[in-house]
Image (cartoon, rainbow, N blue to C red):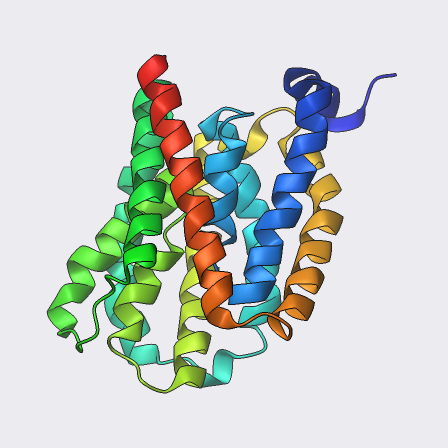
Length: 258
């Protein structure tokens, strides 16, 4: 039987094992999102990159993240720190243009290795507790937002970059959560436009696969929200960081082995 919208090509490329693994990865990633409030892409993209080309994985994850970010961002927009947003957005958009160019042009081994290193560094910094504690000057907005834009477009994992910066600028937890949600939502909208212009969203099976994965995303968020009430936040973060280290290391090894 021929599946609609090129989905049969995507399923055939995955094989039986991949067709089972991809929904489970999405379920796990959004369980993390429900548990910690962010990090779905940081978990999902390195794992999905073992099963699908990175140029397919990043737009797929973007479609799922956009849905989740839209639901949260529209509810908390009144608390957004618009001054911080105004400083971040121009540099973030410039970084995204560069990131999309790299996503299309870089060799697969190079992008896999870079993604693996990024996940590995994120995980190790979290496990070692090496996160900055002092307030940061607004002068950091330009390099941080540019780097976050590149990483968002290239790997779909720019959220932690913005979290690190904004958490050093905003002390009110409600305003911080709302501002992060707004940055991620605008980042998702901008990437949707860029990916649409470059044809990344037109890949066979992409939209249909994203729609099929939406129930797994929703189920993961629901499970994570329940776990959030039962598991200490420190234990949850430790589990996430350990998963990042393992997935990042596996990608680096895979890229090195060709």
